[in-house]
Length: 281
Ligand code: SF4
Image 1 (cartoon, rainbow, N blue to C red):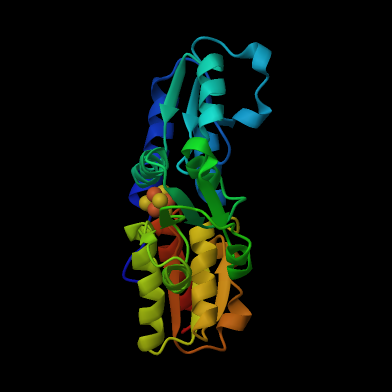
Image 2 (cartoon, rainbow, N blue to C red; image 1 turned 180 degrees about the vertical axis):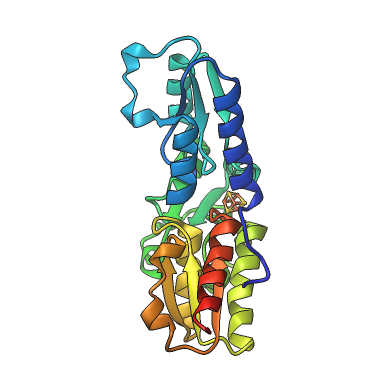
């Protein structure tokens, strides 16, 4: 089992707010999108009473209903919409994402151009972009997109989506530095993501042959862990739950590592270890 496991601080906080709201709220508790990108965690909060906002009948919202913003945050214009619809909006945005949002707002406000390395379809990236003043932000997902940038960007600040591959960010940032020598680089990948990425690299050093990456198929940090493991030559099985483990294939390996994404419950990874140890008998 990887040295780091269980929910990260941001996910733990968002789930805690959801369960508290279900206990304390006399109306319905809605969440704007998936609270966290994990099937099991979402099933559990839904069982506790959380409902998806996209299924909400706007005409039936009552003054007692609340809306919870998910861990990835929410674009500013949507915040305004939710505040009009609901008396209570609970901010479940991860504090790390809040910190990057403030940085984007402040630095673009000073006239800097923000180059955000990340996936433009991801809700966190959409949140961060919405905080930029005067549209002074470019999302860059590939080196080809770097070539499309116009000249005259002025002062540049380079930042990262919080869950991307750190080695990708560093090599990308060094290319940007060559093109724009005065660009300021801030590694905004969160500690939880970085620790897990390091744990994958340690697996390789420890002689592990195959890795089970446990977590949501749509979870960016979990997909990143799987990509890093493939990149360094490990065989990867990305599964969501213990019952998805491909037992017959795993039987062909002697040394297997298990790691969970930041939105994967430690119980899930522990169950996987139990199931894998049972193969030895
Ligand atoms: S992965 Fe990082 S940024 Fe995302 S919720 Fe967890 S701590 Fe926050």
